[in-house]
Every structure is written in C-alpha cells, then in structure tokens.
Image (cartoon, rainbow, N blue to C red):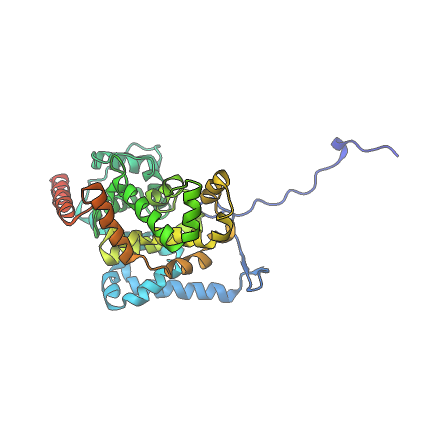
Length: 349
C-alpha cells in the first residue's frame, strides 16, 4: 500500500477566530468551580456582576458627583469594594476621581494640546508631559504608567492623571520616582530591603549569602507600580488600591504601601523555593514568579494582612539620616506645593 505524501492530505476545517476584547486578549467565557474544574459562566454570575456595577454607579453618582460624599460617609464600604476590584466599565472614571485628575482637567482647560493626527496616543501623552514638566521630562518607566491609563481613558484624561500622580493633586508629589538619581526609588529600595529582612529573616540571610539586593529585582515594581511585568489582571487590582490609598490618606507613602505589601507577599508565598536557589536561579525566580503566585484572589489578601505603615515611616527617617538630607520632608512638600500652584497658574494665564 503506497504511502500518501504529506501534500496529499487535505487540511481540516479551520476553527473560527477567537473573539478578542478591547485590549487584544482572547475573551474567556469560562469560570472555575471550587474544585478547579472549568464550567460555563452562569447567568447568576452575570447578574451578580451587574448588581455589583449598579452598587458602584449609585456610590459615585452621575459623572462622579457623589464620590467625595460617599467616601466621607462610608469609607469602610469604599475600601472593601476597592479591594475587591473596580468594575471594568467604571475603572477609568474611578481612577480619575481618586487621583484628583478630573479636577485638574476642569481647572486647566486648553493646557493639554493634541499633536497632529496619526501619532500614537502614548507618544502624545508622554510628549505633552515632557513639555508640561521640563524638570522631570520623560523617563522610560513613565511609558508603562501612561500606557495603562490609556486603556481606560482619553489622551487628555490620561495626561492629567499622570500630572496628578507626579505633581501631587491630592497627595505629596511622586515625581521623585523619575527625577535624576531616582531619589524616591532609592528610598523605597532601602525600606523594602530592611522590611524583607525583618519580615522574612531566613530569606534575608539567604539574600545576604548570595549577595542579592532589591535593586536587582524590585526597582521596576516601584517605578511602574507593577505595570511593567505583572499579569494584567493583577496589575489592575493593585492600581485600584494604590490610587485609592493615596487619595484617602493624602500621602504618597501610604498609597505606595501596597507595592511593599505585594512585594513582601510574593516573597513569603515563594519563600521555601527561593531559599534553595543559587544566585543566577534566584535572580531569575525573583523576576519571573510562578503563575499561582500571581493569582490576585490569593496574593492580595495575603498582602492586605501585612502591616508596614509604622515601620515604613521609621525606615524613611533612618534613610534620611543616613543620607543627611530629608526625602519629601514637610518643608520640601510645602515648596513643591507652592511651585505647583505657580506652575499651574502660569499655564492658565
């Protein structure tokens, strides 16, 4: 019996292309039961999500008109809902309300000018910011922040949210993440190194033996607030909490606590594996955490349970003494505020 040539076989039916969501990812209509088996998403789950969206709409009001009132009246409810994750359809608006960028936009009509048609939105936002704030200009890590924001809002809205974050609309400025020498990043790495050694002493000792420090794996965590290499669904949940906490506490260190907490939670989750690895494999593992460690429903509750507020402030003071100059001190923040007010006033005139 003669063998058929490969060319003689007829191709089978081509499956239809999988539907994509607005981010270019394949839509998934499957959910997982408690035993890990897959099942079709039920009508009940759709109805539950719709009820969740309606609760959020009632909380923020039309165009966000009730947001500030609800935050003051029921802060614990807001905190609980934020930690569960903002509904996808409302995330862009909520982020703008939380950060104060919506107010900046309304107070500064015409400051953001679009470039000629055809240019990419990301370029437009970053170019506009580099013109707006020449002291900071453009630093590579800013692109990940702007790119994430553009998934949920227009160019102008993304621009003003970036301004709100770095110049400090409702909190101390975070531009130290991108100034020459990355002063805030250096402070955060010092704090994280000490926290990791105190919270996970065996792992800290192993890091010392292998000569590993946070600058080798954690710099991008702080520079991009996990938007660089973390799974998209996890990064969004972290950003929900990050923006809310800098809004509610009016202090950037309080908001950025979530970065410290998630980082510590990751190290704790992978602790038993990490302490066995030599230098090269250890660095790789710290930059490529396993998929199960990146499950937001597992990782985030673990992160929320870690208390770092008091110790972070103590380590901040230690860092300032060590470097003989305060980072984001009260006087520094006051000068920044005055500078910001003069800057925005000049832009409006």
